[in-house]
Image 1 (tube, one colour):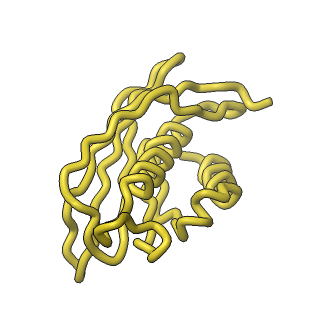
Image 2 (cartoon, one colour):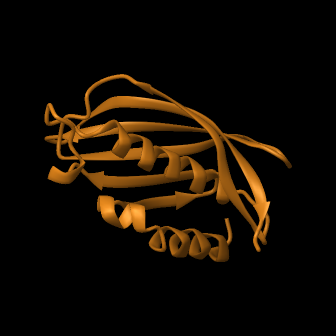
Length: 140
């Protein structure tokens, strides 16, 4: 992956007000793989005290989307066209980490996956598996 692509992903992430609202950070970027971490804040918990599924989905979608962007040619962005989530366990802990990966990159569609883990006392629990499709679009 070129330094320009890494820079483009980091600048795009920094411009996402949703990620800022959630306190999310871009943990790592490599070709076809992106990791995003987010604390489970008091404002992103559901009624039982666990991290809300909306937090899980948001960082998983972004990790998968940026993984897709990391393999796009210059001048392209990506948009999510569909994303499925399987919630495997409650988001119990201090923070979440989403690991997004490209499964298959095509000219018209990019198939992606994201796995989201809750971190509690240094232990990771797999809480969600996501699969989706990203659509390359030219930058306007």
